[in-house]
Image 1 (cartoon, rainbow, N blue to C red):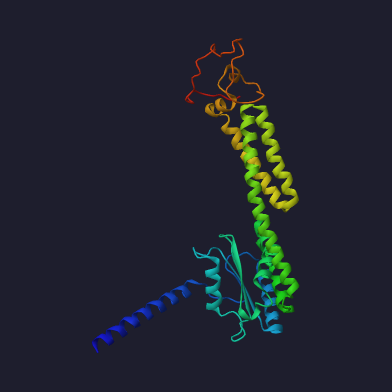
Image 2: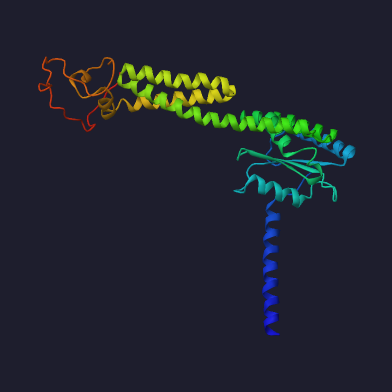
Length: 313
């Protein structure tokens, strides 16, 4: 009997501990102040009032409950975890119908999520929610224009829920095709970044060391990758690739200013000691000697440790 009572006490303690954690988690979440919960202060008062009225009208027409929540930060939690906890704690949507939608925006964490109840998954599918964010919310958020992003995005959400038209197989296929194209674009971006980076680094170091042949090859290599990318990637990805190539070129140019790098790229012979352009790099041969044996050199071929001083004007 004592063992049974002990086990019951342990079980009650565990249940109480878990319940305490659940209550603490719920208490850490904000309380709703309506359908528009702008805790991050992204909207003006008039905009919050207008959007609140629109969401109230939507509920009267369709019974669906749509909530907007903006927070400064998620306090270290993932956006999926936070949105799910908030959705279920608040109970967004009608009981038994589960027709709720939560639009969560974390301003400082620069992340968002559209959480959809089971009853509206046929209307606002995962693919459609993703496309909605990519096309409406996120472009404006990247420009730090949260007001326009939220208002335009919520207008789209309201329109979709009001029409309550499940996606046709053709529309679902189009969304999947769009997502596949986006994944393919990212794969091509990484692939082209490798070639553009190698060519840009070659061009940058060659320019810094003034080695003509390597510079030409680097420009051709990087240029081919950039030109080809215009045919297979969106223009935004091409711009990112171009900026990446430019940064790598500058890095290579600066590294070629170091004595060791410059000596390696230009060669160690007499001809490498000047400041003019070389046709090609490598180990140079003295031009002051007519001997084919190479036994007469101006210097012994020593290498600097990089010490000394430089000046600019």
